[in-house]
Image 1 (cartoon, rainbow, N blue to C red):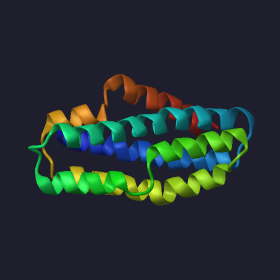
Image 2: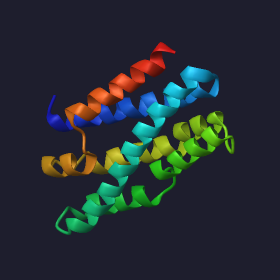
Image 3: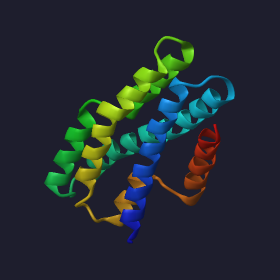
Length: 154
């Protein structure tokens, strides 16, 4: 498995964990909901930052293949942003939205956006761009797994 595939696999795993945490929070109270909330704030924040960096990368790399640039711009311009997911998380936390609504959003528009971004990036093989835009590193992966283990323990 090459490094790009490792990154893609980690991003899919984080997205699956986010949906599982939102679903768990919908039916939980107390410390379980708190663990879900902490996990979601961390992971959705990381996805929002990745989306911001991808948008910057499109602007900073005018020499990137036009089909890749177009597909990324289209995916980033569509519904399902991680910033919106964070807003829904914060609304659920404050009682102005529901955890179930957040889970449905993550399972719908947000997940479709993840798929569109992955599909747009898949043919782009410049490793430096993947590293820059997606910002995955060992410490972050370990932190995500630690936080998700708290959710999974329930």
